[in-house]
Length: 240
Ligand SMILES: [Zn+2]
Ligand SMILES: [Zn+2]
Image 1 (cartoon, rainbow, N blue to C red):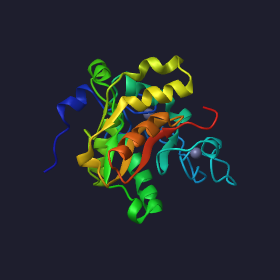
Image 2 (cartoon, protein in one colour):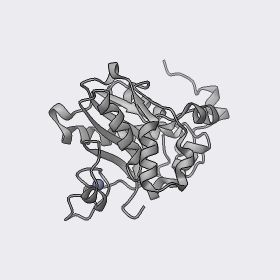
Image 3 (tube, rainbow, N blue to C red):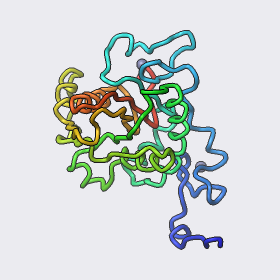
């Protein structure tokens, strides 16, 4: 039996993650005309962090210079092509975008898992947590929303409580990068039981400098995780 259009949908039609108007055609996750706007990272990506690079490059300039705590990472889209959408998702309550985002991330995860292969394939998804303070203010953690939907799409279980964030790191904007790193390192705590000896896939909305992902990976490894990779919806390009 076909279910009728839910009443809530008539009052609050799903909005398109690109144009923010009710999605056309009805029932889709993104408008047909808007689907070309988010730009995929593409085939030339850094072998470490997954940022777009020139075809002849193996690593991005950041990964050539710095060591990272994680094993490898991947992202679905170039940040600039969906920055407005991500802003509304994070700060203006557009949780419904998570359905489209997670569908795209699931496709990226499929390819990435095939590349990682064997012992490196993820066993659990762990969202980058936000502080209790920010959770109260905003009402949801965008990374946890993505991880939950991605778990539905991929069948890989999510361990939402594996990591906690004790400090609100919002005030770090004016710090130098080494101060930032020190501060971040103390902010995350991992709980051994769910992560011990596991290959973990960290989930977040965006990867820029990698400081947050590194701090989370460090905490998970300290708690006994076997290996930590990451998947984000968006990734900054090198100039970011
Ligand atoms: Zn649209
Ligand atoms: Zn890189």
